[in-house]
Image 1 (cartoon, rainbow, N blue to C red):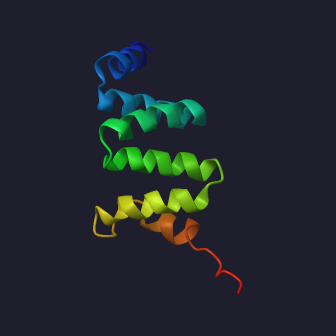
Image 2 (cartoon, rainbow, N blue to C red):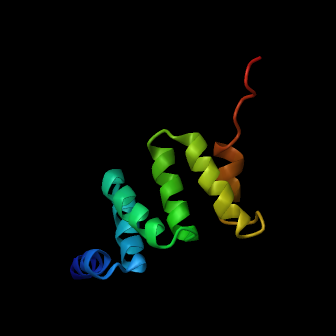
Length: 102
């Protein structure tokens, strides 16, 4: 789409973190995890505490099988919202790990 092209251009040429985040979200919805991760990491490079970027990267990592890393991001995201974010249920379901054996 034309918006997608403009967002890609703004992300690369203008270092526009919001444009990068928009492109990241698009690729995440399309299931293209590699491209979604690239654009999400650009967002977080310029805005390290961007909560939507953290959320996107968390889901990317979860879909790639990196549950612990994903949960770490989900919990950080959730802390921005006094542990009452939209990820509260995801955390309670995905981020319960069995105890480590002795």
